[in-house]
Amino acid sequence: MFIHAVSQFVAPPAANPRTLKEVLKGYTDTPFRRVNKFILLALVGAHRCVRGRTLNGNASVYLTTENGNLGDTNNVLDQLYRQHSLPMPFSFINTMSNTAPFYVAQSLNVLGRNLSISGLGLSFERGLELARLDFDPGSVEEALIGAVDEAPPEGGAVHLAVEGSFWIHVKKARDGALGEVAEVRSFPDREALAAWCEEEPVLPPGRGLLACGAAVPHEERTDWQRRTGLAVFDYGADYGPFDTVTAYGITKFLETSPSTSLLHINRNGQGRYVALILHRYGS
Image 1 (tube, helix red, strand yellow):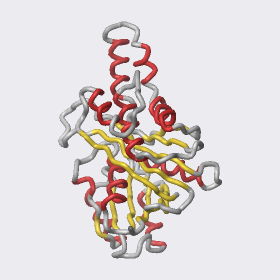
Image 2 (tube, rainbow, N blue to C red; image 1 turned 90 degrees about the vertical axis):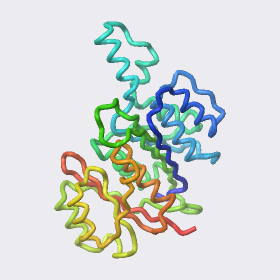
Image 3 (cartoon, one colour; image 1 turned 180 degrees about the vertical axis):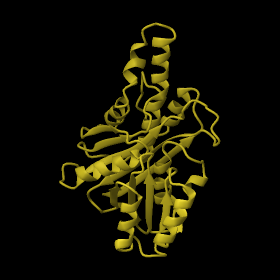
Image 4 (cartoon, rainbow, N blue to C red; image 1 turned 135 degrees about the vertical axis):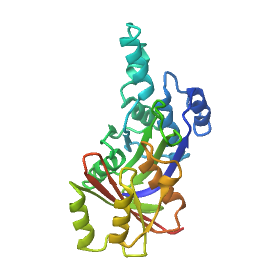
């Protein structure tokens, strides 16, 4: 999959969705009604990524998320169980996380596959994996892949709460691409990933960067650095861990890094791993 555009939107939690509507006006004149914060975050990120480009009418949308629509889900549950009343109709409808990619596809006039994906700590990786499987047989030739999450309610978190919307525009065609997703590979455990790394150098030492997801412990990161011989790309230092931080790191590398390659390793709470290899083309 060749990457043709990327976008980042990371901000403190928006108390009022109108704030996001004003941001969105900078990218599209389309009016949006009956939308919530989760949908607006998705729209801001997707339209920032497209930035006036015309997508193929059969382009697909893969929206990945750890928690989906937290705001309206919380409101609906509050109405049902605390207020003992029926929820507002549009709030109830918008609790479905697939509503957001529907709005993205509708506003961009694309009719391809439209999916929401959540993967227990590896959501963005699972979205890339699924898209790549769809690209290989040729059933999909162009897509937007995004990661969107609201900040959860305050709970004494150590790090500053942020929420984000990060997207990549991918095509099967290479012409004009800024990089590519060269590998998306899953492993059942750490030992299987280590064996893969030892079979042959994943990236030549000194010829790329290593990044690790927020769930990879510090001592393990040191071990992966020793095994691969790669310098560390520490994107997590910017904001600390948050639900879409992997997608933030990938888009940051593609937008800002002087290096040409990135090995990204992440794991979830069950000890399963995903390794990504991305190549960034020179300007």
